[in-house]
Image 1: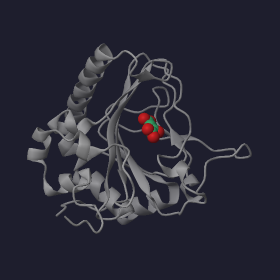
Image 2 (image 1 turned 90 degrees about the vertical axis):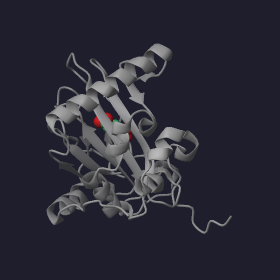
Image 3 (image 1 turned 45 degrees about the horizontal axis):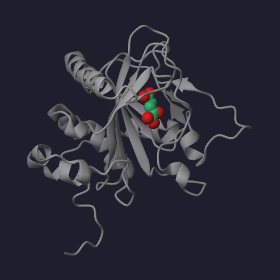
Length: 248
Ligand SMILES: O=C(O)CCC(=O)C(=O)O
């Protein structure tokens, strides 16, 4: 059983209207600093093992499959506030699509405006309710200079990607380290360029309705250690109890 906390009425109204809402103070500054440090260690080790694991002109990097890389990420993915927000959007049985870090390096160009996977593979118009939804965990203060996420308020209601005729009004979602921004997966969004000399580090806790195929195959990736620790909520997020009509 989940002990998750739903969004307040005001938070949910803001998410429904704009397609995103920022929840301040989900982590303390010290917690955000410690998680950032761990992400940067993982990023450095993965770059040393595979220099091609970078993107955006080699300036930025994704760290995939976080739930199997440190116990701290197992706890974060089950955080009652962020998980409660996703359950409210996607249903109480929603599952994890992927949990990654997005490290936007100094001089990185913007990531490009998009809707989240697998929405562009579906016929349009998409429904106005969310099929997938993301959490951007701010491990640094996100500013206009260091690449705070772009969103186009209200675009989640259009159910399609922008066309050449659209003039999307981009807003950068700035906030303090330790905040988490919940975004409806159909919103037009993307990382912005980093014009500072320091990495901008965020986590992306990405969830989907139980009927959709997740971005990563968690059951194949799960390590025995992580599974041995997994709570019932964690097992559900990994997909162990979301197979409709399963029989032995
Ligand atoms: O890191 C960010 O600011 C956003 C990343 C993003 O848009 C995504 O991965 O879908």
